[in-house]
Length: 289
Image (cartoon, rainbow, N blue to C red; front, side, top):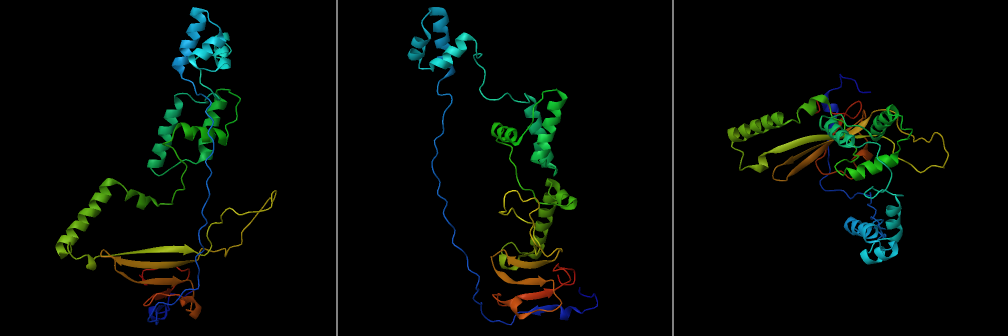
């Protein structure tokens, strides 16, 4: 851990290289994914209008089911099911929906939650529907299969990975705050006469790369109860501060390490003019900025 009394001159280093060093890190070629055109089976290749005419012909004109099926080009078994009353004409195929018009209300609720920064997870949606079905004594189990059919019926709904955003930053996403920002930007550009000087307008930002990222799904032996991934176990990270002008000119970046001293192998493959900073956890602080 770094002490606060260490002077800034001992925490910042500048690159001494004059040309770009060759990096030994190779980029693997991407494998092309071969896609096969699958056959999509059509369960309903007949029109309702033809089925209506075939039913009326059998009932009103007295022709046989076979003859009506051939004349109106509809499946004989399907026509027979509707004539016998085994299947109600106009009924939709597939499992009955757990919700009727309430699905539209559920969709509006989910989209509203997402718009204000509190999106619901897939399991939460399934739990909501399950509680509703239990309250109606429907004796059904809402599964992920229902979720897939729900998304198919409502293509405006999708499962997305969200990014964490603080409440303060979320407030800055509204139209009033954005309009205020651009008003200030316009006043600044006018005051300093920078409209036609993109090379004098710079944007700086930082990004942190955790040394202990969240574990991804890994291939393990089937039946393993507690698979694990070994990590550093702390919140240390490497921070990169970049600065680019509106004309596209990039100045050398600043790399902040979670170290007390800068080692030579930390500068391999560096850009000429790179600046290095040191902090306790690799985070940028006010003094380094």
